[in-house]
Length: 332
Image (cartoon, rainbow, N blue to C red; front, side, top):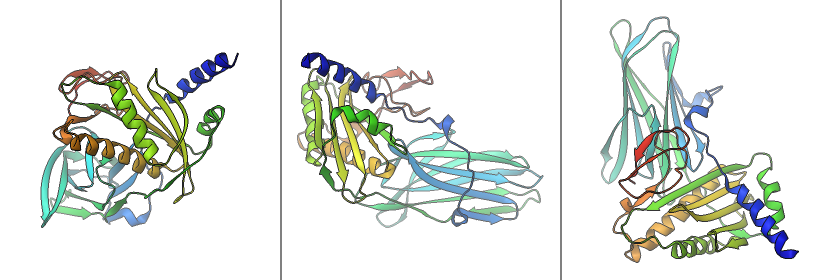
C-alpha cells in the first residue's frame, strides 16, 4: 500500500514540472512608467523599462509620436554591459556590434532602424538579456535619433537603468512532497527555467550529468525533497536568508537537455540562482576539459518566442519549436 502511495505521489510531482515562460506575444503594453525613465523633446517620447522575464531580463523600449505628423529615419541605439548577453529580440531584425566605450570596458551595442513612425503612433522593441556574471553590475543606456517633419535631426537619450543581481544565502528548509503543489499555487509565485545542451560529439552520459546538477543544487545548501534516479529528476527546497523568500528547485535530465526549474515569490532571486547553477556547471566542465569553450554550452530557448525547446538535437542541428512552429538551428 505504501509503494502505491509513493508511485501516485511521484506521478503527481511529475505533473508539476510543466513550467511555461510567457512569450513575447504575452507582454503587456506599458500602462504607467516612472518619469525617471522618460526623456521628452516636443511630442516624441522614448520610454525604457527593465524587468525579470522567465530566466532572463526583459528590456523594453517604446518610442511614441504624439504629434499628428510622422517622423522619419528613426535610429535607436542600446548599449548593453558585458554582464548581459542578448539572447533574442522582438522584432528580430536588429544589428549587433561589440564596441569599447572606455579602456577595458567592452559593451554590446544594438541598433534598430526603421524609416517612418506615423503620427499618433508608437513602436515597441523588446530585448531579452541573459546574465553572464553575478559578480558585477552594469548599466543599460538607450538613445534615438530621428528626422522631424521640419527636416531637423533630433536626438533623445534615456537615463541609465542599472542591472544588479541579487545576492543569496540559502538555508535548508523541509517541505513535505505533498505540500509542493500548494507552494506553487501561492499568490505571486514566479517560475523560471534554464535549459542547456552540451554541444560536443562525446556520448551524453545522463547519469553523470544528473549527479552533477544534483550536487550543484546541494552545494548551495538546498534541502532534498525527493530524488527519482530512474527518471532523472530531483526536487529541493530552501529559504533565502537575504530576502526571506522560499525557493523550490527542480533539476532534471530530459531529451538530451540539462534543466533547472525554479519557483519563488522573488523573481530576480530566481534569475540569480539559475545563473549560478549554469555558470558552476560550465566552470566545472572547463576545468575537467569536458568542453573547450563556453560556446559549447547551448541555451535551449526558441529564438522567436522564448519557449523552451522540446529536446536537444545537437549543436548545429535544426529543431522546430513546438509552440510557435519556427524551425531554427541550435548554436550557443
